Length: 295
Image 1 (cartoon, helix red, strand yellow):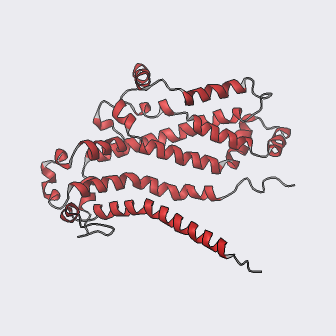
Image 2 (cartoon, rainbow, N blue to C red):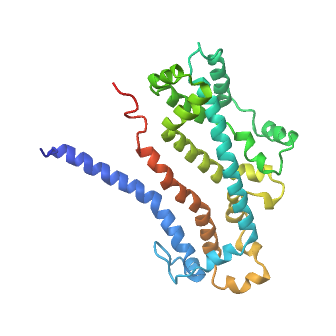
Image 3 (cartoon, rainbow, N blue to C red):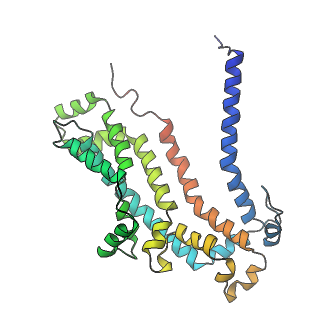
């Protein structure tokens, strides 16, 4: 039997579609405009002729960016940060969230641990003590200065241990009856059943590491150790294209402007996140927990 919506319901659904399409355009159009500028000639971009479609289509801006060793080095540092930082963050988050998901009979002083973690959310030591601690531990100017200080996100821990607590208790009890220990239960049962939550946290952590720029500027003494976003911040905000010009770039710069160069670098910087997101999104849409327990 075909369901017939009432007039009020139809208006509500149409309004929802209009609002969602509007939000989608607000997110999509700036990226399209940025891509169009990066693929346009320097003259057209500088004159403001580019809107959503490239004018005098060219890859010269990307060619210029590809020849900049500073950009390549910062891209490598950012990939190192993500490849080391995300697995470490997720490992620590899992190891903290699992015991906190148990009741007080299984984990002594559980409430005290939770209060301890909550205090770190409510109160911070401030920028100077944070910097002094990193300096005294000898992490300055190393990749670990960007990873270790924020390796445990209490927000992610709270999200994950609440997800663990909502998993069916029957599965855990069945595992214990079969002789499984805590390590086996965590890696073979909790982690596979929690993939939607873990995938979400991986996306949060990856975006956080990739987009972070302030700590790179504060903690790196040498510009060659800057991650990509710190490098882009210096290029877009603090410096202009004219400060990076070399003799070898002179011919190429005849077709590249400051706007096209910045647009190309920003778009390349955002591209890895745009490529990773579709692969993680499928976990958001699937309910792995559904149907895992009969009756």
